[in-house]
Image 1 (spheres, helix red, strand yellow):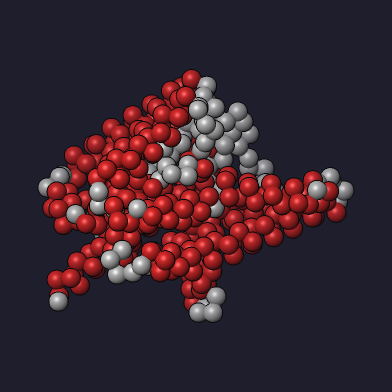
Image 2 (tube, rainbow, N blue to C red):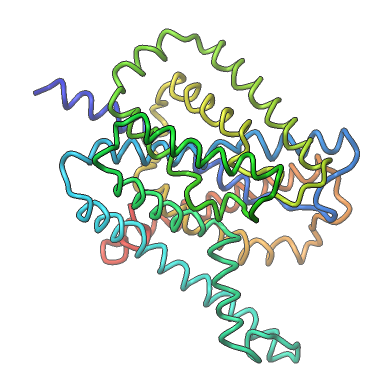
Length: 360
């Protein structure tokens, strides 16, 4: 009886530690202020920008693997409908709440501008304006993740009977690689935020990881931290090179797309490396299991709605800034957005009646 309990504890310690790291990478990525034009031409400036944008680009795939691991943990103790209902209550409802909050804040800002005499299609053509705002939020902000995530779970559960069949993994892997190749050929317009089946493979990978977790754990422990760290550094350099190539090739696609082939490799190597590093005790004290999703929901609203009220009056914009200066600003914005989000989530967690709005 004690052995299963020990295994479960190990699983959740590992998940919570990587959740904590993954959400930091997501917030960091979103706090970067893009210059105009978006990409630097000077090699030195471009190198700094490439590194700043790529080094934390593993977070999204990390989240999917962790979610897949949890699916593997629950798949044999619940039905597909029960699992989806639990996800709906704990994931979609909070997402919808903060989507509405985001819309209210956007419309409040636009109303102030409109009252002052500036024209806004949001009020002249209200239905078109609402549709445009919903599209922008769902596709162009961090809110894309939850719909894609729930859709990916639904697709995976459709193939529940074949979950451990390697042929399913190959098929889903090819679906993901399609988006990698599409960056170069542009058969369809896509970003990682609209890659409907692009991330299902990483959920499946998490399920397989759960099944063979004991073997995975033994294998990783035999690898040295130095070797895995070196592999991560090499994968990072190669990922930066691919982004550099895409920028200079003039492709329309996002050169930092999460589903670039080199970033997929980088993310997987980082996953193994971070797992090998272990579970720092101080992370557990921050209770990432109850705070991560809330931070994910709130941080982008703070970045878009709150930070400009601080930085704009100070004249701090991306205009005329060097790449290094933008990185400094990025980290300042990150600390402000992350700790504000964490503090709000902490307060909400204290109120039992409303804690559902930050999910689980």
